[in-house]
Image (cartoon, rainbow, N blue to C red):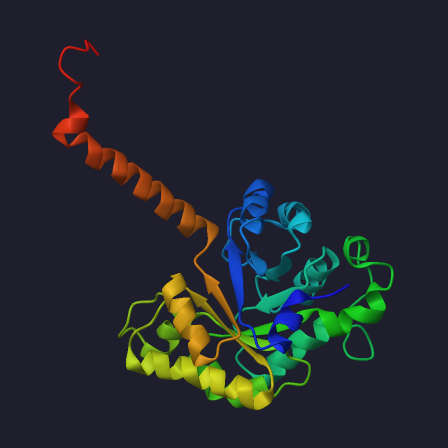
Length: 270
């Protein structure tokens, strides 16, 4: 059982993460074949239930992409079931204190490093019979920093023993820091928000853990990698499908308005 993300980061390479909000194994399979280093199934805001997420994990297996899951909340049952289903990393939302970060870590590690209950129903098939012996050092624990309280506790959260990284949700972080002055969204250009993002990178580097950021475009993700983010997520299945569909419809409508496209060649009868 290996985790390719750890190998990439050890070599100093940033990783690219995909995002699944549509509860569909075929969508997961399509996304997994596109060359992402990892793909996260979103159980928090995505239209995905647990049983469907298992089918999505199965669909992604052939590609070799590293499967991640964002759980709905800091809940031991949800965290352990996602790991038992075969997730190689957990992204947990709304971690605001070092105590909460430590709780996240404890739910992800078998004793003596944590309190995870044993029962890797699917994980032992995908990771091998020695899963329990190796899981603690392979699965990734990402705490989401996305509130003003979390930023106030940033250094303490980053220093949590066993935490592998901090994942920034820029929309919620903007809501938390700007207090209504700025609309939520990705790819922040405001100096105050970019300063906050760079603070996260600095705190992660100081603590020896990874920094991750959810982005809207590949251009912004590349900039974030230049700031020191180790993992960037670009868009999602919902947004990519919406954008591609909209571009296709617009291209068709635009061509209908051109005289050369609106009329058939003279004399053809068609």
